Image: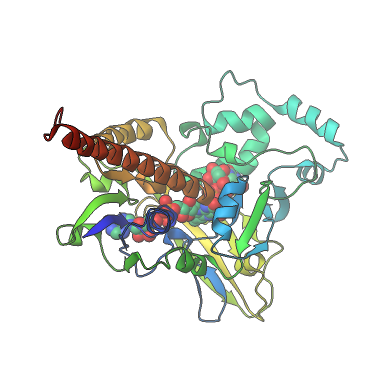
Length: 387
Ligand code: FAD
Ligand code: UDP
């Protein structure tokens, strides 16, 4: 009998497996329907021997020392600051929009203060930043919104930014300085030997058994366990009884080129041209040296593997219905990007998993207190007393 059955060997499932096994000494079975661990962060060496990310480019960044310290138990790191350029009419501009973007796009020589005034003069008054359109037009105005955000967002989500929650485009800031890093988090690094190696270490504990190529539905009645942690799609768990939660999917096209570098920086975004949103060249991210180079193109689509929950109010309402069902279950926990329908980065999923572990520990200690109460009332009265 396992103490825990964990469905999904991505960050949510693997971090919980590790904590339960090593801190709480629980026996854990972790299953995944894929033929590998690491969830969407899985990386591997392609035919040319270049380390690539099977489910699109993954760059680790966090402001939390606790999260960074936790993962550092399982990997060494390579410092890496991601940089992105946007391709507009054949010219490349830094993204997020910064002082250099504006000066080179408009042939200006503004200072930081002047560019702040420039943005203020272009920004449209927005009462409440509700949608992804509000965020950008309220900050930099409609022209830059049309150039950098509208087309990209329509491609990526199949929706107009006005239909998406503000938090989506708010992920990308606007800068008045020349900082051209995509992220400004305190910790930005790539696992030195890749994500999959890090996950191998996270899951390497005698209390953890791993079963791959195993779908929850096929085995749930054959495995005996006390508690369940589910990190797959929450609507799937409940047999879509309120209808399907929409997810955005992607096709990935990989290419290897017979030259050392292909493009100017790690990622180039194509907001308005082509069916793909961006091209990422892995060697920038991993620091690998190789005479060839491998790239991935991302083509968004509606059907397929669920990669992105879609932050939109009617989807949140539907998710809340499933969450209510989830809250009514005992000894069953829903965690992760698919389990809680949240557009979370890797560090946020780790934080959520660690918080869930604390909650479980707390519940376990309450249970054992209650058990002790029973035991002590038996001792005193020779009966179950109030129980
Ligand atoms: P997942 O990694 O999706 O793991 C869930 C696992 O559950 C999967 O392996 C799945 O096979 C398994 N599963 C589902 N249903 C079942 C079932 N019925 N039976 C058995 N197994 C099942 N984050 C960043 O911080 N930085 C980035 O640069 C970044 N880039 C990204 C790029 C792309 C294209 C995508 C899609 C995501 C990116 N992310 C990034 C987000 C990151 O991938 C997630 O935050 C993280 O992987 C979520 O972990 P998870 O454990 O919640 O889910
Ligand atoms: N976005 C955009 N243009 C860009 C970059 C981002 O419109 O050049 C918008 C788009 O809606 C995207 C969102 O901002 O989905 C978040 O971008 P991010 O790079 O964080 O997306 P992810 O890496 O999660 O796919």
